[in-house]
Amino acid sequence: MARKLWSWRACAWYVGVLSVVLALLPFAIPLSILAYAVVWVYTWTHDPRARKNFVKVLPIDPRRVFRCGQALWAGMLDGLGGPTAALVWAFVAAKLSRSTRAQDTAVRDIQYGPLATHRLDLFVPLSTATGAVIVIFPGYRWSRTKRARMYRPMAQTLCGDGLFVVLPRVGSQGSPGDALEDFNVAVQWVVANAANFGADAGRVHVMGCGAGAHLCAMYSLAAPLRTWYAQADRMARGAQLLASADADAALRRAVRRIHRPPRVAGLVLVSGVYDI
Image (cartoon, rainbow, N blue to C red; front, side):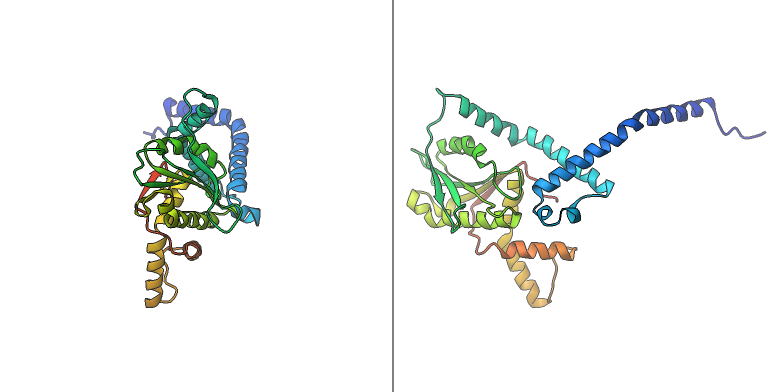
């Protein structure tokens, strides 16, 4: 008896799948173009290497574009469910509200470093000061704090609870390494001048949201990484912490730029991305 290879159910299933594929095919090309456009625009606006050689860093592989798009979508959802919506709402409410607006206790545009762009806002509590300081590393991007003013309502709220809040503008040259270096200079200024504005230099905390949380985590690891590389180089020349030689060299350069980072009392990391 001949073996029955095809049944009417199997044929119907394959015909249905083929019909769905043919129906979605006209949408595949525009959706692919849209995905590539979004990822390329994001790469152009957020990757500092794209300013020098855009073609070299441009994601071409469809699998890489898919992973980038997936990460962007996840980050957008995480931001909407995390601090972004609350920060935007607080900023808009502070701008529109007149009767319930908290008293502005910020001393603005204090120069904390040698560059003209090294400026920070210091929020000083009027009463019940605890002595603790929070230095905020704003999120949104890794290269510079373009939207630092969006964090002013949150900083003023924390200040109302008796905390000194410092909101620096970092990333003067537009790269993650420059942002970390500027942030280190700002923290050094806070530690050196804490006694002058009534704070405790031993109770300085750093806080970051989104990309700022990732950079805060990197900043907190700068001193241990410098120690590890120094000890590893004594035992074996060219020792690597990361599997990729290029990634390890980039990490060495980033850590080398953070000179004598002060010891901070704690980290406040909100909606951060750490596995990159």
